[in-house]
Image 1: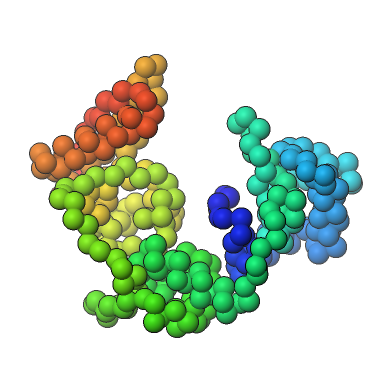
Image 2: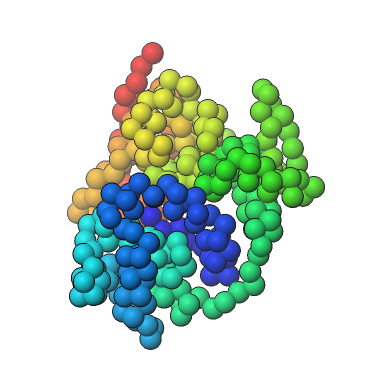
Length: 289
C-alpha cells in the first residue's frame, strides 16, 4: 500500500512513523532472513539501479537485486522495497502505462524544511483532527501508527487550536471551524475499501449498528465497498462491468424508505457520471430482523 503525501511532507512523516512500521515488520524481516548487513547491500544495489533519474518497476528492481547476488522475489522483494521506502531511499516514480515504478527519493523530491519530533507530532495531530474530527486520541494513534502516549503529546501541543467535547465518557477533538452540514438528507455515498471514513478510526461504533458492524469487521479491519446513508453503513455494494454499462448490486442490511432509495439512486447516477457509463442499480435486502 502506498500512501500519497505532499512532497514537502514525506521526510518528516517518515522520520516520525517509520520506526513503528519497522518494529511491526521485524518478525517478517527475520523470517525472510533480511539482516541489517543484507538490507544495506540491498540499499546500495537499489541506489545504483535508480541513480541518474531512472524509474524502474518492481520486477526490474528484483532483477537488479538478483544480479547483485541478492535473492529478491515475492514477499522478500516486497519487504526489501518497503524497508528502502521507510528509510527514505526510494519512493513512487512515474507511471509507465498501467505499471508503477520506483525512483530515488533524493532525486524525485527536493529537500524541504525539516521538523523535529515534537513539531512533527503537533503538526500531524493538528492535520488529523482538522480533517477527521470529531475523533479520539486512540483514533489518531490508530490512524498514524503512533503510540497512544505520542498521540496525546501531539494533541496537548495543539489543544489550544482544537475544540473538545465529551460524550458517553469519551473525549473528542475537532476543528473549532467545523460546521454541521446544511444539506438536507437523506444523503448516500458509495465508499470503496480503505475510505478514510471507515478506516481512519479505532472506534467505529458510531458508523453502524453493533451487530452489523461486527459482521462487516469479521473478515478484517477494512470495510469493503460499503453503502453509507446519512453517516451510517446500511449495506454493501458490488459492481459488474458489462459491455456498455455497469450492474450495481446494493445489498441492504435493513429496509429503506422511498426518499432513502432515491438518495441512493442519485449516488448511483453520480457513479455513472464518474465512469461515463450507464449504471443499473439493483436493490437486495440481505439481512432481516
